[in-house]
Length: 82
Image 1 (cartoon, one colour):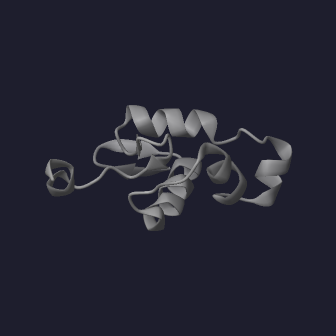
Image 2: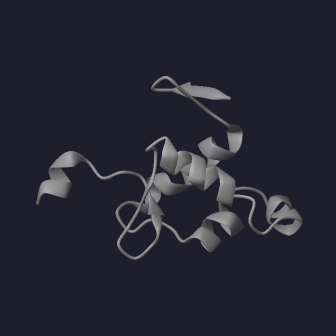
């Protein structure tokens, strides 16, 4: 586990954040995150492995959903005001 801004993040949460970083404003779908963010074994064992971690990251305000329903990192405040 790693601590970020006073919060502890699990290995899976860190993997999801690293995966979302290059996706920018577009983000990634739930299915895409489940299939590609971690290992193929995780996907084969449980196609929904990322669900609880995405919920946790949203509660911690580390990610948000775009208007299209994709998960992404929060946009900087200046971009939101445009």
